[in-house]
Length: 378
Image 1 (cartoon, rainbow, N blue to C red):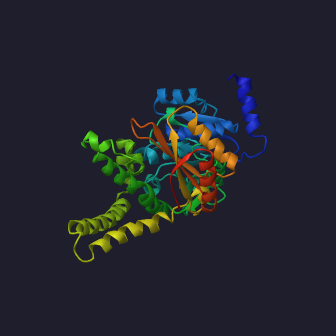
Image 2: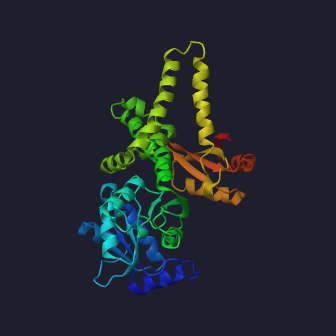
Image 3: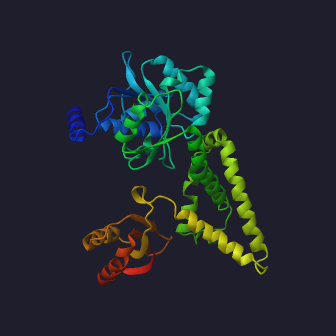
């Protein structure tokens, strides 16, 4: 794409006047988050400055179109620090001093520790506010970056007493320009929340996945969507997670201890399954899980529960596309899609999520069109 086409693309994106940020945005750190932020802001026509301790990493992000190299006359109005947690406060302090008119935010996954460290350093935290996009991928780096990474995702803005709402408004503008949903929380509320919904799940997924390392091939051949769902995030970067878990250790330990109590209860019940109350204990543990998962927000932040229809799809080119096309022709809105394929099998399973009142009609219409329904449940 040539320069003129880039400008035309930016102009087209801004045709509806949706851009909120004004001025230059400087991004320090050109990994997954930093590059993804830059890609989306460039689509909005923002002058994005990319910097990184690694010149090679910065050049790669620039090659992908996430921004430009720093210049001596840069005057950013907003600085976004997207570096590992153990150096976040140091880099934020440096950026606050270097650009005395800029608001500085960071996107680290912990919020209490950087603020405490910045205050200890004597930094001007009246121009700093921590934030955290609840988005990511199992793989990092600029090569994994996506301009749409934050669309529809929560973006926590962790306010504190030393900054005014008006001074911090640019971070809300940033989140909105990226397509995210701003959520105001205190640093303590944020760190307690991510311990429960992000940090402990990472530990659990990794521990479960480690059980697979020495499992016989005959067992792994039986793997279905359940184990894949539980272990999906286990491919994450160990070095990064050592930092994240260490920075939020006390809150993670609190959740893990409660989980250990529950796990011990299930172990005790299964160790003597015929004992009085054992089956009830297992049933209550599974039932408690039903109650917890029902509270997770669904599509667009809704708590609506969907029905699932599982369709057998031949493992031949074009069949999945045909299924999705015919669901659209039937007039049913697809809320979610999951695919499962067993090695060597001639068919796959497509699990489509829809609103419950459309389930019966979808099943009937798909069967009429020759599809085999493997299951349907609310």
